[in-house]
Amino acid sequence: MTEPELEVLVRELAEDRSQWEHLVRHSREQREYVELHRDDDVAVWLICWMDEHDTGFHDHDLSGGAVAVAEGAVAEDRLALGGPPVTRVAKAGESFHFTASDIHRVRHCGSEPAVTIHAYSPPLWRMGAYEILPGGELRRHSLSYAEELRPLS
Image 1 (cartoon, rainbow, N blue to C red):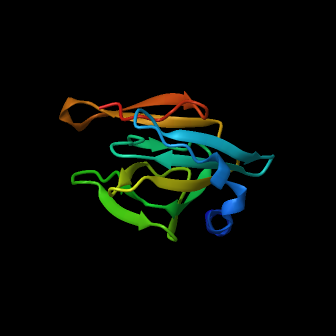
Image 2 (spheres, one colour):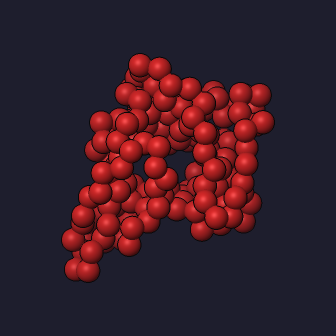
Image 3 (tube, rainbow, N blue to C red):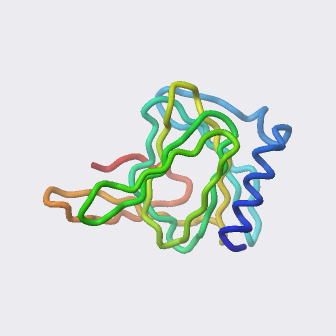
């Protein structure tokens, strides 16, 4: 699926609360997440966010993706060389997409818990988590799709 097609999918799922509302769980210690669907073409996840939850900078290896915000708000920061990250805030009812080669991070934004729906195609198997070393050098760490992303620096 293309990234725009994934964005349509996550927006539709976010609007259909019967598909995911019973799975929402919030924890202050970590993001709560559950895979809603996986087939040969797409994987879909529900992720619950609270204060200070942050993925750290990462990529999605070979998978493009999209995120729809069902409740609350999240910020997406795109890594920018030579300057601060480019940030956009997505609130309930809004969505965004990204390519496999984009390096970004997603973090909770606002005072209310957030719920997001994510879709990846092809289905996510590996991710790259980025550690920012002194002097601005990047180091990529390869992670399984099942591992929780957290800031490395």
